[in-house]
Image (cartoon, rainbow, N blue to C red; front, side):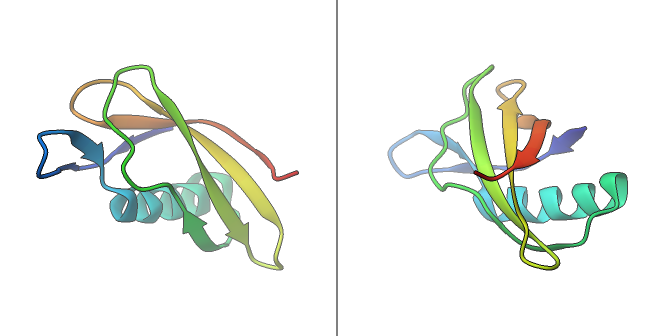
Length: 89
């Protein structure tokens, strides 16, 4: 599942993933493709764009169940994909 997410350029010259846009894209894609109702998504802020790097976001589904979405950065344009969705421990 490929998610296109816009970049945000920090003042110190680093390019980082826009966590708010990523959270919205994950919510929509999980609901549309997997059919699970998502109540909330939390992704870390300040994730630098680096091809091949992964990071995790925490999803709260309807009913309170939590899952972890592992995201992978595909390129310097900050295209990311949801590489794994698994129950939170």
